[in-house]
Length: 443
Ligand code: SF4
View (cartoon, rainbow, N blue to C red):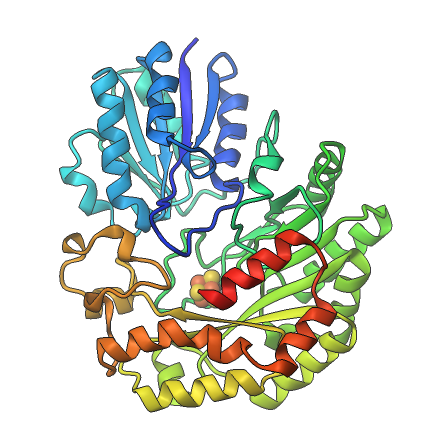
């Protein structure tokens, strides 16, 4: 029997640090347990631990040599180096494999990481089996890439012995929580929009799970005490029929979860969808607008139809759903006055929450490759949506202007009596939510 550590890393030095259960690596655990049932699988997540590097050492010492699979986003590029080094120092025969969106967007950067034995680019459900067979046969390669001709059967994450409570009291990816514990659930992978700044690894073809299988997962989560679900799809309503059928099934099963939706395409909503969301237990959804300026939007392959969006937001609001719109600043060649117009627009829109992210150019994206010369020179923990790193300024604004936006956008948006009163009426009344909202406003 071999010991296999599945490790998710998050860089906690970031002020806007958030976490939620890592469904990607838990899906791999399901695949590995099925294909190689004799191994012992151990899950490690530094984001929910204190003194995490000491705990990682304590975990590895008695089980080395072992195989360690790291999953990272690009923000953890530098942190991965530290963890891989710890693992090799404990035992040089530990085998280290790294994957996730942080590897996929820039695989060549990891060539110099001497402590990493192999990297895995793309979704790993099929590739991981080849990797494990190659390890068995002493033929491990330096790099493995997803074969896009092979369909991935999206597995259910391995929720066996998973401690959901660890995640219910930390800054999670949602601004709101109605009930705890919660779990993220992914119904579909992929998004067809090909935004030139997107560094998702889930591909541009939609890969939908069978609704029956998701319902089974939901029942299992219910039995484990989970009371809230976050639908983590990039665009849950990419197919309106699929989204509605899924919601109908939840209503039929009377599962009684509270539900939030982390990615809706607002243009592709209608009254029936919002009504079903509400009936199924939905209370909160997020969607991206990014900007109102048509030239800037054109640069990022987006369009906005203001009257249509307004109409749809009013419908969802009447049904009592809480909405959150995402906006960006630091778009390629954006000026301060264009940002001001965008901010004014955000304030007028009938939404409950607004986020103002600094547009961040990632490697492997067409905008990132166009504007950034040498990603390696920039610390990886600068690559987040509230960074103040002037090397990531791709707008026509000064860095001071970007910092001013970063400091003031949330205050200017939320410090209004009408806004505060309307939020107090609508938000779930619990200490976690109030704390999170205060964090958002004070950001
Ligand atoms: S809509 Fe979102 S997930 Fe889809 S391509 Fe654009 S950024 Fe990526």
